[in-house]
Length: 344
Image (cartoon, rainbow, N blue to C red):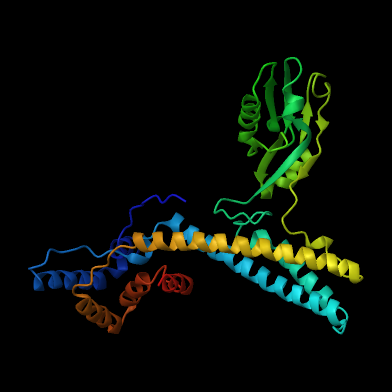
């Protein structure tokens, strides 16, 4: 999460450009500022900067993204704890009213299905946190280093998004190292938004944006020259998505054995959620520290006099004064104030 410093204009100059009708009240404020500087000649004048808008936008996204992820994870953890307690109670006493456990399973299933939207796209199916759009990892049957490193020279045509625009070529030849094979696939498919790596079993692992995954899954096809893959028309490839860390659709409650199996899976899911929550809280703590270090020191000399002038302008009748006051408050909303208060 790198922070790129961006220049920030002052509120008065921006408002003067957007609202020429507000010139008179702003002139009054500017005159008041000059009078304050004259009243304190012993101190060098320090320009007043707007602390709220000075914070870098990517850093704000880091903080808000982490907060969204934490909200989702805390909600999920609370539902899993309640479900775990209900299942354990029913297994122990069998006195719980019918349907309560099933209702909690449905509740969590709905929460889990909303993961992408609820977390702002910061959590993938493995509960890995990133302020970049979440991704989906998948493997393809036959795409292993053992199959790809052997055989004569061959050029593979791979369809990623359908149509000729989605075709990518990968050139394979005898003697290529595993790293070279992975690099060639990665370079070929990167323009289509798909990156390539390898897992411990020697399978190529493809990573696509989660939002694009359905299209990639349904359009993935390959054409070879009959050495590693068939020649002729493009042949559909079966893409197998990496299993999510939590799969509530497989939780059963029909009998005692099913509930015992579900209790184990719920316990494991809760452990994953709590581990992810700990990591994201650490990310938020780091981002919060960076926010605090990035906030500018706000000049406070003469703020009393400036507040008095501002109050006088507010008491002046007329549309110009109203425009000045509303322009000064642009961008100051409840969410921003709450976020800043949480930093302390």
